[in-house]
Length: 183
View 1 (spheres, rainbow, N blue to C red):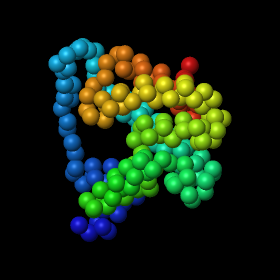
View 2 (view 1 turned 45 degrees about the vertical axis):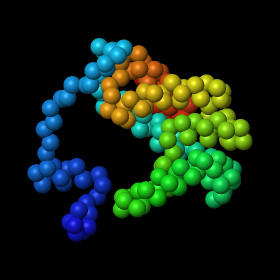
View 3 (view 1 turned 90 degrees about the vertical axis):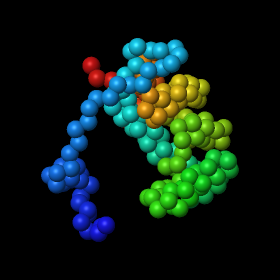
């Protein structure tokens, strides 16, 4: 692989690969069916993943920004519990060992790591001006967590899950000033 042959501007990559003849025609796949407690309204919707991706990455940026403001470059050691930090170090090391791209530690935080860090007693004051009520924020992420797991593992979500996703994500994204309700 010659890196110069694929050194296109990121915003043109899809167009270039399409022009080069790389095209996909994907048949719509039927969602897997539950073997217990089936939900006939369960569907795949790309917007579900987009909502979660936006939420999770916005929270990652916020956590790093606010904790860095509290503790400077030592925020990882001073504001992140050792077990959480060790998981991030291990995940980063796995990527490095596999020859894959390696990212900053915060990008190895899972959804509930973010909730834990934001709600942590000594960190919460840095987030109070955004979320105002710790329990409301934590409960929103706890409600979103099983939905995030379903979507990340290719399982469809039903109408109730969709309503929870939209309502809870909207609450958090509005607090983050990333989303607003349209009339």
